[in-house]
Amino acid sequence: MAASNLYFVPEYPGFADGHALPPRSRLFALEPISVGTAAAEGMTSYVIRLAGAYSINPRRLILQEFAKLSPGLAKYRRHGLFFQTEARSINGLHQHSQSFSDAVEKLCGIRNAKNLTLLNLQGLLPFNGPGLIAAHPRWCPACYREWIDFRWDAYHPLAWSFDLYRVCPKHGTTLLDRCPCCNEYQHVIPRVPVLGFCCHCGTWLGQGKAEDRSRDDTDIWLATAIEDIVAELPALSALAIRDHFVSQLNQAIDHFAGGSRRRFCIEIGLPANTLQPWLSGNQKPTLPRWLTIAYGLAVSPVEFLKMDFVPGKSQGTLRKLNQQFKPRFKRPTLTKVQREAIEAELRKEALCGDGSVPVATIAEKHGLARTYLRVLWPDLCQTIRDARRAKLMTLAKEEQLRKYQIVREIVDSFLGQGIYPSRRILSAALDKIGISYADPEIRRIHKQRLTANGIAIS
Ligand SMILES: [Zn+2]
Ligand SMILES: [Zn+2]
Image (cartoon, rainbow, N blue to C red; front, side):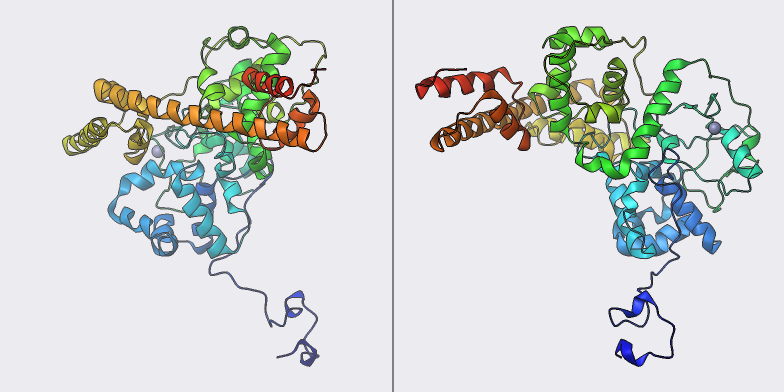
């Protein structure tokens, strides 16, 4: 039907393209809370509130609606542990984070549902790195009390999911993870679609008494830094990239420590060889390391990615972290069958020896921390790590040779066009393709190409 025939119907934007109604979503298009701010909502909280809009069990919503789009979720029908603890990875960088984001976008018709997870950080952080997602849901009782005073619905900010977010910066109190009445941990996806009440005994969780930590500067800084990451998440996918992080880090080392990695590490309180795997290999930094570097430079983690290091400007001073941001791992109880299955998998990988599957992937598959596997099967893990390290070194070497070849080609191309490839021009050209001029070997190749072409170096 042509829009012009609808003269009796009030004007509506949906008619412009010839459709009588704008597209409908299968489920209610619930608005996520405070996306783009420090208080942005997490995916698990969104799904629980969505189930609340229909007054149904959130687990049923996932198994009946989400599983249609992500059939892999159907296997959790009889797997209570997934909803109790393992589903915490939905808020992080796990494959479930992607499945849930896709499902929410399709089912609820909202855009950029990945902003309810940490998916925008997947170019920078490893999916199962330490310090990322806490083992159990945590909450600030003072925040709960405040929301109920304003008659706002309780929800869980994404920042509360981080293992390193231990204090609410607004109230200066420790986050709790056990019910003040029955002392139980809370389920990540409860059976009842209500947040703020214990999923075991129904106690109001806003009544818990939390320890005052308002004087703990490091924990407050940490929580504020994580809130900063959360607030900037929607725009972070372009910045949170390993190569950009490495380039910023190289410039910071040049600027603050005269190019000495060792001095830089010691001055900010990191072990002296910490930076080696990122600067010379393909490894991604972990969240605690990213935070430690930002703390050392006295900037927020996002500011570190945006920093402009002006060459020749006076050096600033670094500050030392007086404690390591150590994540706290939970030791799960494994059944004999589970232990045997994990051991068989580790043994198979160790015998294969091609280094294609890291211990971390096997640990993630079984919902465990890799350190846990290292404690239980140290020899097997060491064999796999050695093979993996050898493979990564080969890959890094190949990548390095590829980069050096590109540099040679760029210098020759400038010379072919009659342009003098000065340090500034080459550095700008390399920046565009994510190669840092700070690498001494690249500087050497630059000089060598100029000399080979009989050009004096200016
Ligand atoms: Zn609070
Ligand atoms: Zn309870």
